[in-house]
Length: 213
Image (cartoon, rainbow, N blue to C red; front, side):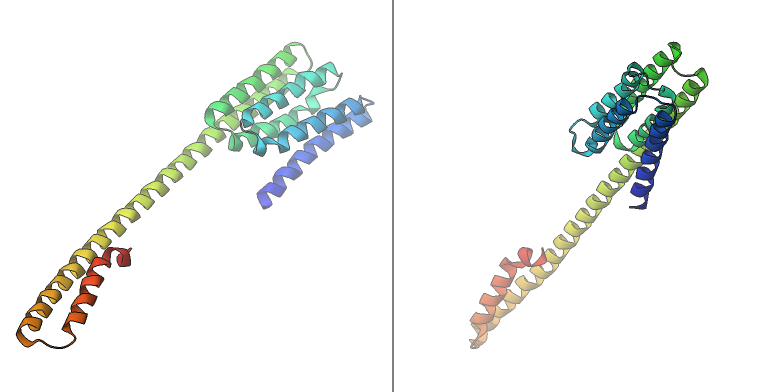
């Protein structure tokens, strides 16, 4: 819960800085609000999307669209840096690689058109590379954890099966011996009630596997 709150604070802080900059510099505030609204809608619908990488790729297009709206792109980059790090935990390795490469290509193009300083491009590329390594580390650890959990569950199931088999063999053998002894007693002494005991023992032996489970 705390991590989620921190993420939202970081997101709205970067958006706030972007909008304040547009407002103070007399930029197209309406266009900026539209871009931010679309970006937030795409971001918050990521958990509902069957292909989350599509949302991220559309968010990448916000950068050139912002440039066409005469918006200072350099103040959009911190928000996209947030999405780059967020995507490291949301996207699988192949999808994340596609997203990061698309983001890097777009930023390189806008730098070539001199819409952002070259230093900003270098910083953004460093953030993308960090996101790439975080993504690979996160999913490798998660896959190892899932594999360990599966192995642990398999070991427990095998142990439970072995214990069930041992109990069944041991108790079943003793019940068989008891039935044989009761049969001998019944033949030799004709003791009243032995037939009932025999029936109960036979029933118990029959239902033993279900009882153990």
